[in-house]
Picture 1 (cartoon, helix red, strand yellow):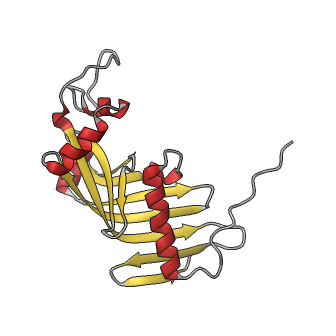
Picture 2 (picture 1 turned 180 degrees about the vertical axis):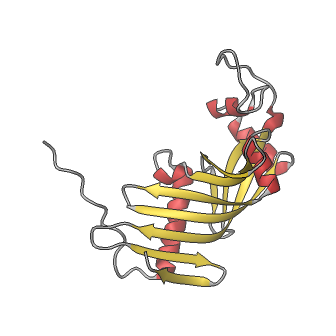
Length: 196
């Protein structure tokens, strides 16, 4: 019987808050460029409306496409007709949650979302994406979640492709380790260690 995997060691105990912030952004940049990086597919939680009209939380996985660390911005794509597009138009504040079992790190990002479906930022990204299989996600003539008789793909136009920019307002990092958990927060008030 093979040994159980070792618990993540966590960050070096002498890591300073500025070093940790830099390491977190380095991981996010790596995630946007590496398909296998666990932070490439964070969970996005938004505020939506349930069928009965009540306010409800809604969460789904998104694919991190770009990271601009100096601007504190993350980019992912969506169909402009999707429920998340309507949700972020009504309530642009959201949370992205990243988890890495290998690092033993959870990163929660409080973000403000903006959606663009026209203009140069959208056109240039579509030009890079349109020849890839991922383009099919935005070429359906039907909105996401529409009931269909069969899953045969149909292609429409790129009119529904949209770019979502998430400006990071707060980072809440939690490291789980056999030697002790650690937690820190980074926001407009600065950087500080927190009780895990």
